[in-house]
Each structure stands twice: as C-alpha cells, then as structure tokens.
Length: 141
Length: 351
Image (cartoon, rainbow over all chains, first blue to last red; front, side, top):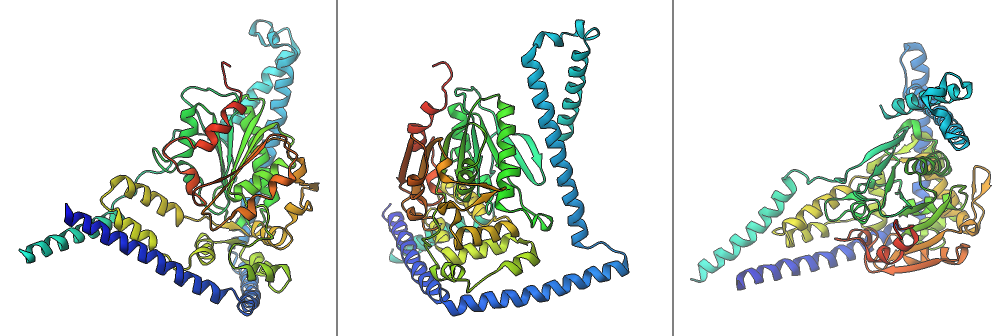
C-alpha cells in the first residue's frame, strides 16, 4: 500500500515537474518568436513562396491545355457548380415549403383525396407535395 | 528483503508505463455516440438532428461550432458529451458540422459561412422541428459566428449562448507582436492564402501549437500518472484524438479573420458588413448568456466580456467559469450554468 502511494507520489511529482518545464520552455520559445523581425521575415517569405507556387500552378494550367488533363482548378470548378446546384435546389425547396405552408393554412380540408378531382387548386397542391417529397428524398440520399 | 522491495517498486512503475503504452496502442474508444440523423446537407456541411427520448422544451438548440476543429468535442463520449446531456434533459438538438473544406472551398469567407450555411441551417432546423423560436449556441470561433449571425438574423432567435467566443481582438493573449504587425501593415499573408486556397489541417494544428504550447508533452505525463484509471484513459484518448484532429481552414475565411477581425476589429467596432448588411452587436436582442473560462489561455476574458456592453438584450448574463477553453463544457452532467439559465427560457412543455 505504502509502495503504491510512493509510486503515485513519484508520478505526480514527475507530472508537476514536467508541467513546469513545459511552461518555461514554451515561454522562452514564444518570446523568441514574438519579434517584429521574425514576423516581417515570415511575411516576406510567404509572399515569395506565393509567387513561386503561383507560377508553378500557372505552368501546370498551360501544360494541362497541351496534355489534355484536368488540373485541381478544373476539379474545383466542377465542385463549385455542384454547390451552386445545391443552392438552387435549396431555394426551390424553400419556396415550395412556403407555398405549402400558405396553402395548408388557407384551407387544410381541401387536401382530402375525395375532393381532389374536382378541385384544381388541390391538384396543384398535391403536385407541389410530390415535388417537395421527391426533393427531400433526393437530398437525403 | 531490501532488494525484493526495490524489485516490487520497479515492477509497479514498469507496469504503469506499460499501461500507458498499451493505452496508446489500443483501439480508440468510440466518439460521437449520441443517436442522430442528418436533416440537411450542403457541400461538405451536414445539419445533424439529435432527437430526445421525450421532448420537454418547445425551443430547440442549434449548435454552431468552430471552423478549425471537429465538432465531435461536443459529443465526446458517453457521460462526457454536452449534446448527450442536452438530449437527456429533453431538448431537441441540431448541430451544424461545416465539414473539412477542400481546395474548391477556398473562397468561402466568414460571411458565406454565416449566410449560406448558418442562416439556411437555422431555417431548416426551425422547419424540421416546427418550433417558433430557437436557441443558438456558439462555441469558440463558432460563438463569434453565432454572434455575427444573430446581429443580422431575420429568424426568431429566443436565446443566444456564447461559450468562449473571441469578440474583442484588440487584446491578443499571446504573440501580441504578430497581431500588432498585422494591424500596422508590416505583415500580410493574403498572397499565400490566395495561392493555397485552404490552410491544411496539420498547419492549423501547428499554428495553434505555436500560439499556445510549441512544446507539448505534459498531457502524456498526465496519462502516465493515471494510466491505471480506465475511465480517465478513455477520456484522455478521445480528447487527444480531437486535439490533434484539426480540419483545414478555408483561405477566404482566414483572410477575413486576419484582416477584418484581428487587424481591424470590425465586428466590435460595428464596421463589419455581412452581405451588404451592417452586422451590429446592438442588433442582438435575444436573451444572452456569455461564458468565459478562468484558465482559458486561448480566449481570455478580455476577448469575451466586452460583448456584454454592446448588445441590446434586456435579459443578459455573463459567467466566468472555472476551467479551460474546452473543459468548461465537458462535464459528467448537464452543466450547472446551463441548468440554471436555459430551461426556463426554452418554453417548457406542460407548464
């Protein structure tokens, strides 16, 4: 029992010492990095790197036109078009939902299947229902 | 006799070391275990719905989490999940997981996240739950986004809870010279961000490490100390996994954060525009609860508290809680600060 307690104390002391050392070292490193000269250097080097990367990327674009292969930008453009499509579907769904809510609040009894054939408005509502449900299923899949 | 005692001691210390190594090698305990279903998807974002067993409140809770970490921290594991606590209390919970942005998402700015993701997500959640009002709960940078959204929202926000949100960027807790250099125009990282489009997750991780703790080994000593405590080890492993699991950061969002927030402090000064609308903190009228952590090294109180003076909310409360940036929300039960404030403002059913 005493041995176990001794061990726990040992680990606890080790932990406390580690925390203290870590804090001291980190403080020194942060003080070292927190200098204007280093920041200016980092900013300048990032700008130089940016120019080199940009040139490389543009060269790949040129090569892709000759080699007829897609680049990351092409893939990104396709992905962006998909997001645009999603946004359009979202807007349509939003509109349908508002229309549906409006119709339901006007007269809910009109959606009774027995009167649908005679009621052109109710037919439209049923169609809206269908479209909305299919959109929902599409989004869920 | 003396020798045997020494052997025992050595044996015991080796076994603890062994336990710690084994803990690191063993399969990761499950994370994100609360039952959920997707309600809406857009790009990489998913709006998750966590249904309660028994709905006890009419106002659902909508979580907005940070852009640089995974929201799984809100549902870390059984018994230490904030979302689980909410669900057990009878709240309907929605969580907007932005997902990891790719190269193609480099032009997603903070305002795009607010309008196209958060606002649309809140509308979806309201429609899905059939509720008339909603509680927005923003955590960390998600708290800043939630406050920005609330400052221009048309949706009925009843309660706004901001947990450790960086709002006032005039105080830099660490590396103040870097912030100063940005403010004075001595440093700019716009060009590199335009080229790489998204900051990879490992760079986000390294950047945050540099800001907080460039050398980090103390957590492993904590593991060693409690290697024989299974519950602690499981929690440690989940937390460690989350800590190292940073997600990429969209370039346009980083640029807006560095330029509009760190450099110009536009949100606090009332100069921030979101889709051509002024995002004024004075527009916030919802019941407001703001919390900061006493031991929070990343977002100290000075970055959080000024929001209290600038909102128009009549019902507002500020709490400085014991704990760090993340730990204030990892509790074995529904956090007290929430239990005392939220239920009576969430339209209890049957009252």
